[in-house]
Length: 523
Image (cartoon, rainbow, N blue to C red; front, side, top):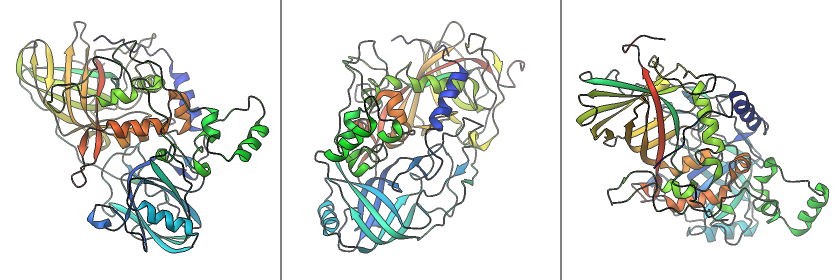
């Protein structure tokens, strides 16, 4: 299967101007980002269905956000180097009054008693809420949590009033929990992200016998292109009709009149198209699923990850007809443009090569350098430069090594535990149970695939990191992608509940020949 090469044609100034425009769309505070995954609510008289022993009897929620009109976090790495070794604490307000929004699955047995409590209109003296400290963390951070950070933050919400607007056909029910005061029970508000550190994952260099080849990664993006005609139609961004759909008729009429002809709905407003103007990209299950257009293809790039005689790349079925996520879409292009000049540079080293055509044992090591890639005036990434291997713990924590073999000139590896791919101005990508297939090209470059599983909840967080800005720019609807990802999940089963938190995926990878300091001469 042939794929076109990235030529970097959009230009750095245009790229970072676009990124700065996205980052500046929203005000700085209060800030939040998508929390997708389990959190837990306890209320007197409501029997919950939560499975973890620590939250037995609590009600499980599927997503949340704090404050009535949350704004979005900054994209780190645009104005200066991104620092991964940070730990951002809770997004919860330090004091009340305020609001917490949560969504509950309509299949939950706890839903009816909670709805009855809401409809009563009574003030609830107290509710207790718990959210994962890892899921509540800024998505661009990477590294271990400080020792005093609990697995779940817990809060007491005082003098609570509930609102529960119903949307027929929505898979989840929205609740607005308005509280007069909040007590932090097991943590304390942090004025700024906390610095952390991390230990190296492995030593370098590794295997020393045989030949060695090193490549600087020039392209990394999801492999969601199989053929030019794979899409019966493309997914589309939300429309003006979607914005007005859940507004009361008189309110919609007034707003249309105020806007006048051609007024349009900007992305700062479009995200608030849920019931009672709730935030749909942060709680995408609270409206009806608009449906996600899937590709039609007899083949797809990827691996047989579960050894059941078929390609496992469910991400292809979700993203293959989203224009801005395909090979030449907005996000892959802009992120790889940043990769070409940013920090860090990913390095792939193949060592222990006794025969470049057939070798029963070679080793593939994934490394990082803080030296940037070099490019020609035509923006082609240049090969044969030397890159110093990073000593920064932000990157050494993610060095990874694979055992592989070469058959007829194609290198394949056994799966490893995980591979973390750093980005310059994007959300970090962790691939679980990864494996590689690499082809060495006659001109000295390499191309290949990385396959494995993604946490689909984290993938969604990346897709909506700029809320309706990304819906508009990428060409998708957050509720459609959320539901499609959840349906397509096929791995990383939760050991307690059996819930599938992973989605199979494949990523295109390309690289140019390179050296590390003990190979050749630095340039």
